[in-house]
Image 1 (cartoon, rainbow, N blue to C red):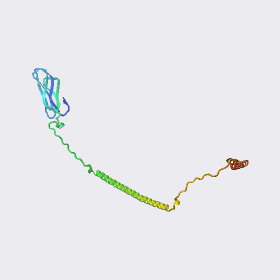
Image 2: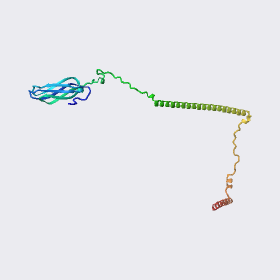
Image 3: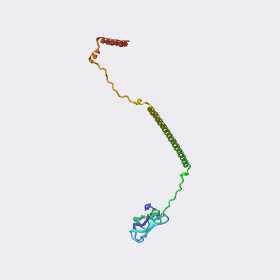
Length: 252
C-alpha cells in the first residue's frame, strides 16, 4: 500500500483501524503482521502482530492507538502472513488530523512562535549613480538658466514701466505748460478787450425792414407776360435750328 495519507505537512496519525478474515486450519501455525515502513529510517513506524497459531478461522477487527505520529513518516504499508493460512477482505483505516502548529511560525498563538525580524536588504543609493548625478547637474543648470532669464525679463519690464512713468510725467509737465500758456493768452485777450472803447462793445438794435413797393394792377402785369405770335415764331425757329444741329452731328 502506497500513498496511504494525503501529502500534507502537519498531519499526525492517532489510530489505525484494520479488519480482515483469517482462513486456516485450527492445528496450523499462522502469524499476521499489519505494518508500515518508516520513511525516515530502517524498520517500521507502525506494526501490529496477530498470532493465529492453534486458532480456527475467524474475522478480526482491531484499533491500535498511536502517540500522534507524523503522517510524513508513514511509508508503504502491508499485511504479511507467516505460516499456513491466508487473509481475506483486508481493510485498513488511518485516523489522522492536521496540526496547525506543526510549524510554530505559522501562527503567533502556537507554542514556540518567535517573531521574525525581516532582514533589511542592501539598498544602493540611486543618487550615487554617475548617470543620475549628471542628470541632476543638468537640471540644476537648466533651473539656473531659467531663473536668470526670468530675472532679465523682470528687469526689462521694470525699465519699461519706468520709461512709461517718465513719459507720463513729461506729458503732464507739457500739458501744464500748455494750460498755463493758454491762460496767459486768454488773460492778454481780456486785457485787450478791456482797452476797447465802450461804444465798440455796444450791440446794434434789431430792426425789421418791410417791403414798401406795391403793384397797383397785378392783372395788367400778368397780361403783359403772355407770349405773342412773334415770340412763338422766334421760339419755334430756335427749336428747329437746335434739332438740325443735333441731327447733323449724328449724320457725321
